[in-house]
Each structure stands twice: as structure tokens, then as C-alpha cells.
Length: 406
Image 1 (tube, rainbow, N blue to C red):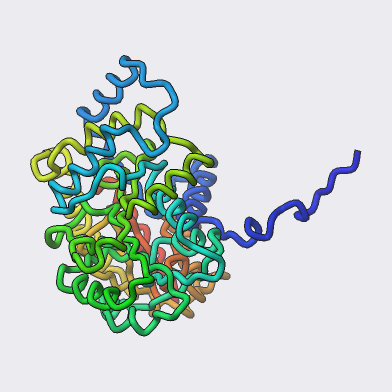
Image 2: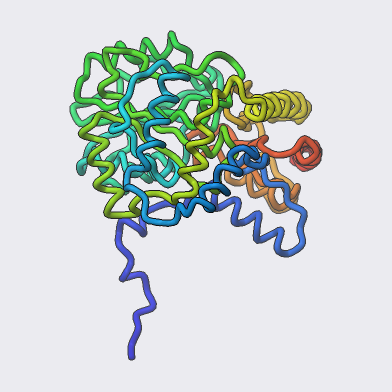
């Protein structure tokens, strides 16, 4: 029997799809660790905290209560109701449970959204830097990513004028995150208001607001662009429990959208994954039932991230040629590394942030992620979602490796 061994069976869509840079670096880290090498992984956005006990107890109770059957595609009614309640309690937003679809993490929710709204050739505006998966998910849906660039020197700020300048008759959607991954930029009420005033003039554009880092905000009260009445019926909110509740492995995310879009998302999910696991839903129900401002576990996590940020900002300020930004949320720092371009050590030359990431992995045994993957070639992303002891060791290793470059 003859079996073809080339790639002719692989679809063009799959062949052209780029691997997630953060997951790729984590895989390299695991490979080195399997060889006994002590690698500190600052490349992935995963809190090192354990899930709060009150959430774990709810999951255990769900098992005892025999939550083990196929769940509703869009999520259990009581969880969708709780998400609606959370939006009212925390964000002063009124949404019906029928507008909520619970998915296998926020990434799945975003994929569902693009499949529901994008036709071939539709353009999606993406402020850069952006989360690595936005462009591939747009492309998988046969859309066209259009990037709105910002710079380190203007604190990665995208203005209303920047947005309007990139709008064309093909623009179908705009997607952004605040707090931002990778920069930690938090958009203020005033900035979002200016954006809303622009979008109000273009009723064909949907606005996708990725709010997964809502609870990790060191600057101010979280603001959603859905707060602005003139565009609310075109805003799709994405959120989940991975970051704020340290529930990355539970895979619980959700989208909140206009009813016709929510129904379409439910139809798509019904053909692909059906509803997410029962136990995760019951755990999420308990998690979202608490007011985050009254929950000491969540407050302690946020304050720990703040202290780690402050420590790393101080540590990075002592490393030559790496200029850290000052993030207001999430758990990343996005240092400018342009002064390192052209420097070398032995046979390694730093031509871009990809080279620097690999140099630090191989020389310092510290994993970071190239800024190129986030649409910003002048920077490199560092996650401080790990212990202070690990951060101290990582900072010392990075400093030593950077000092070798001439």
C-alpha cells in the first residue's frame, strides 16, 4: 500500500496557520526541562496561584451531584444568569442570559465570534501590540487583519484618530484587549469614550472587547467600551475565568453579544464542541457569585501581581539596554530592546526580538516571548505570573546574559 508522505493532504488554511508563539516557547521550555535544564518560564500568561478553595469545593459538590451529562450548548441557564448578574454588579451593564454563550475558554469564544460574523475578505482592525491569536483566528475565518500600530514611546496608545484612519468600506470589526496583553496598557473611560464616538459614525462595525484581564488592574476601575449607549448594541464582550481566578486549566470563557449573534455562536459551537464540561460550569457559577472587591483571595492575587510588577520594573531598570514600560494591568512587562539590536556574543548576533528570546533561553535559561509575535518588533514580552523567588533568579540571569553582549 502506498502512503503519501508529503504535505499534499494538508489544507492551505492549516499550512498557512502560524503556531502560537507563547505556546511554542513553552514547548521549548518543557523540552529543555525534560533534559534536566533549570529553565525559568516567563513566556506564558498563567498565574502560579491555585484555584481558591471555595471554587474547588463547588466543583467537588458538582461531581457528587452527578453533573456528568451533556450540558446545554450555550451553558447552563443558571451560569448564563450569573454572568448576566456579574455584568450588572461589576460593570453596570444590562444583558439578558440569552445573550451569553459559555465556551471552552476566551480563545474559543473569540474563534466562535469570528466564525459567526466574518465573510471572506472582511477586514478586522487590530491595535498593535495585540494578543498573538487575534490575527490567526481572523485568517481562519477568511478575514483580513488590519493593524493599527502604536509605539513604546507613546505607551502603546491608540487614538480615535488612529482608528478612523484605518476604517474602510471592508471594515467589519475591531478587536482589542484592556488591560492589554502584552503591554499591560489599560484604556481609560475618556479614551474609550473617544473611540465610541468614532464607532458611532460607522454602524457596520462590530466592536469586540476582550476583558479577560479585568480583575488584574492596578490603575483604576475597569471600564468596558460597552458602557457607551450609542454603540452598545454592536459591542461583543469576551471574558473568562483563566486569569482573574487562576483557572487556566478549567477552560471556562464566555461571550456576550447581540441576540442574533449569540444565537449564531451557539449554532456554531453546537456543531464543533457542544457545551463545555459540567464541572467547570458549576465551579464558574460559584466563582462569579462573589463580588471580586469583597473576595480576599482575588484581592491577594491582584496585590501579589502588583508587587511582582514593581519588583521586576526595578530589576529591569538595572539591566543595560532593556527599557521597561510601566504596565497598569495584566501580568506582563513589554520592554523596549532596540538598543540590543546588532550586538552579539560568540556566534550569536541579535538581529531582532526573536533572536534575543532564543539567546536568553539558551544562554540564561529564561524563556521570554518575542515582541514580533505581538506585532511589536521593538519589544519582548516578560510574564511576571510566577513567584518572586523565580523572578529574582530570572532577573539575575537576564542581566548576566545581557552583559555578555557586545
